[in-house]
Image (tube, rainbow, N blue to C red; front, side):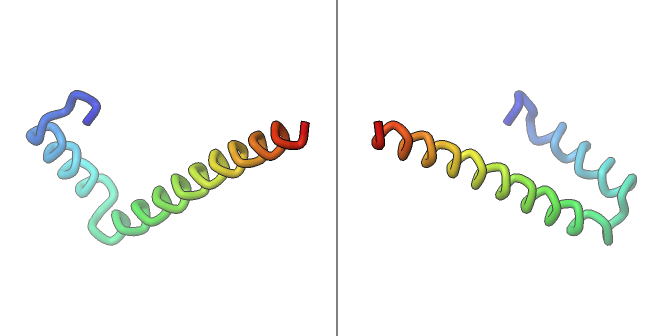
Amino acid sequence: MFGLGWPEVVIIAIVALVVFGPKKIPELGNALGKTLRGFKEELNSDHDEGNAEKEQQ
């Protein structure tokens, strides 16, 4: 995972917890999940549209 080991991931999680607080972390995760899901859907829809255009030619 990006060349990070478990000790580094734990340190990053602790810093995020201190900076954002325990109440804000789930909200940030939810927003990030929605953003990634939308990005993935757009990539798939663009790929599907490209295939449809090739088939029509």
